[in-house]
Length: 135
Image (cartoon, rainbow, N blue to C red):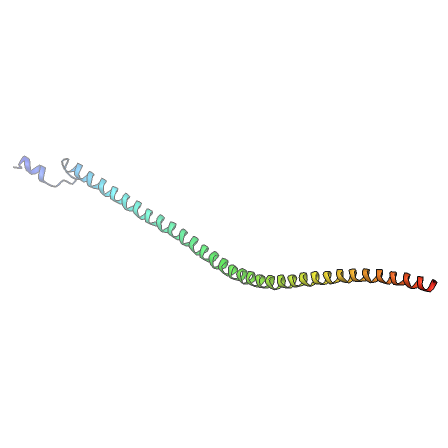
C-alpha cells in the first residue's frame, strides 16, 4: 500500500510539485533578471566604447589642427621676424633721408639768404658805380 507521504515525494511528470513551483518561478525570474542586467551591461560597455571612439576621433582631428596651426605659426613667426628686420633697416634709411633733407634745406636757406644779401650788395654797388660815373 502506498503511503500518503510517498505520493508527495515521488517525482511527477507534470512538473515541479506545487510546493516547489514558486521557487522554480523565482529562480527563473532571477535568471531572466540577470540576463537583462548582463544585456544592459554589454550595451553600456558598447556605448562607452563608441563614446570613447568618438572622443578619440576628435582628439586625432584636433591634433592634426594643432600640427597644422603650429606649422603655420612657425612660418608666420619667420615672416614676422624678417618683416621686423626689414622695418628696422628701412626706418633707419628713412631717418637718414630726413636728416639729409633737413641739412640740405638748412644749407639751401643759408644760400638763399646769402644770395639775397649778395643781390643787395650788388645793387648798392651798381648804384654807387652809376653815381660815380655820372658825376
